[in-house]
Length: 178
Image 1 (cartoon, rainbow, N blue to C red):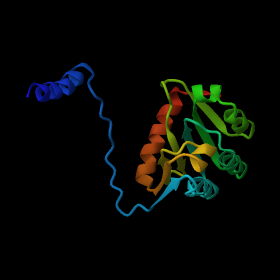
Image 2: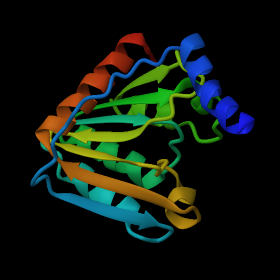
Image 3: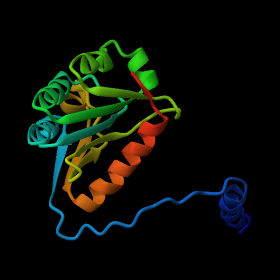
């Protein structure tokens, strides 16, 4: 019995010491088409590439690890087609990465931001034309597609994309341009 009481009191004490901020947004996804991909070798990278290739106005990316040459190339091609492409990367991962994705993207005209406000800017998000959200555990790396057990979820919902875009813009405000 004592163990049970202590177990219940610990979360209450933690909640009293560290109050939680719940900034959840309620979104109803009725009739929002979605695709799910799994890796390894489940087509996740191909799904992301297809969506970037179909962008008509804008591609916003938040990434922790980003070493995928095919995704980098797709973003550069989108930029050349006149699509507004902006990328927010984790500052520490780019500094430590042997692949200098930020440099390559910037050289191709993509606006690159470095987020150093957080211990890890651990997002894995692509927002396309403010209508489609790509998210999941999938880092934008070769290993994510070929070696790791990962998932990608592509959801077509202006409502959801609006919330993700707001979050992107909030992170962009505190990031510094590369």
